[in-house]
Length: 325
Image (cartoon, rainbow, N blue to C red; front, side):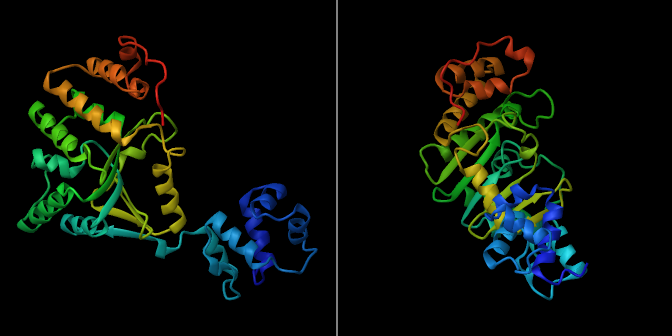
């Protein structure tokens, strides 16, 4: 098919949607009879601009698909492939990637951290966790980033999974930190985020919904510039996305109290960081830390979910009236 007019394009989009006529009609806010007249080629009156705009917004198609010049294979490609201008591969060396992060997060940042602690906090206590090449230029950039993050007025919102925080504090394997380094990092985070409304720390339960794995990669969302990027499994590659709808949707997911995964609010998160710091300092176990969190906060249930079945049998049940946010 040539797909020269709007009706032919409408029919193809409908077929690829795999939706019923009623559902499709409700999405574009048209009555079923009108939609049927287009699908069955009864009407030769093309869908109006409002319908075309709704289709592009719902299915995230570029608006040029309705242009007369967008026909045939080009039309099919436009509705089946991601526009290249919306996705960019950042394949740079370590110094280039560091510059990219600093440029995008220059004034503020909204991030879902891959693990606890974030690299900046890690680098203040442990200089070389991974065997990476370094240089004077790289060390200067890292120091600039640390100084930026330590500024009281730097606006940062950070999400960490409860699982990654507990792993940092209590895991017996895969843990690069000494007791002293853990205490130092937890103390730094507490001092930075406590009573500072420029900085917000959220701890979320990655087992509360089908989002397990979301916390395994660094995701940075710049909703003002409509850009997000994430680190690919290949350490040297970033994936940049400039799809406005996707960026806003991701930001809303982590900024809306209703849509966000179950989490500890930023005021209580700081309190829990202090509890964990004391637990590490005084050699308390994860079970003792849980009991303190359950007794002194309203978020024991979220931490209970992150204990193994065997450990859950050894602790008290979450107290009534727990918050899940």
